[in-house]
Image (cartoon, rainbow, N blue to C red; front, side, top):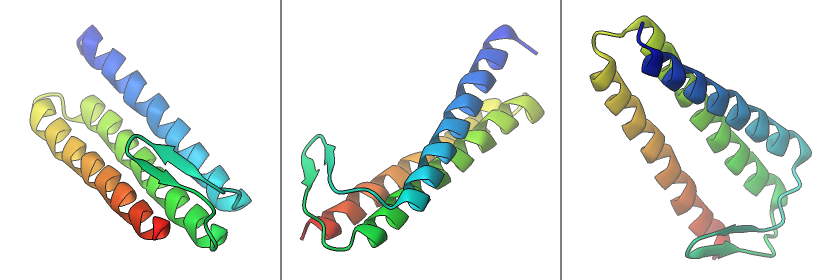
Length: 107
């Protein structure tokens, strides 16, 4: 295994663990009151439980996809680029779903 593959695996697995932990924490605490992203500000949400569950589930999904990317780098080195592209597309789709869902909470 090449050194850059090991570095990629460590980075994606640590990001996956961190995102999963943060998503689980948000889902359990249900303490989100506002979210500020570039071009999107969600304040004074009435249903904090639903928002916390939505954000926590999406962050946990992102963490799971990141762990899958790390595992694919380790187990499938010959088709690494194809697998990376597929999982990165899935990661981007979850990010878009999160942003579009947050816009619904803003209304």
